[in-house]
Length: 179
Image (tube, rainbow, N blue to C red):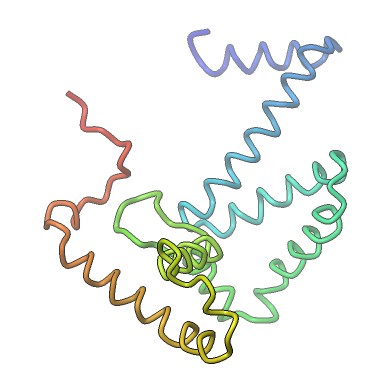
């Protein structure tokens, strides 16, 4: 296959044949492409791609028997679609990529808010640092108040230690300069 036109003609030719093996792999490819685009959306901070991918994934949750996702993903999609009319400021923030966290200046490095929250909790806990704190109300209160500030200070300190070259690097770490 020398170009995309030839590939598309082969796909169009085979989709009408009813060949079960081709249908299986074609369906698998379609599912994988939607999953990849959904995984790409927070990395790029692309809210529209996120909603579009979720919309395409919604019927798969029904087909594959994932009852909770099948029930609640369409509700989430509807709520996000109504965001522009109900909460225009939140919609603007989301469209600007503020539904993700960027910890570095590198491209394709944003992460979902819940993932950033889990990373912060892991940084606070360290190697067993927060174990047992939640058993007493005073310990829990101190952990809730001081934990995020400790993570902020640690992150700020680590940024000060970065070299100027690494700080200004915007390419993804897997992007190599061609030789």
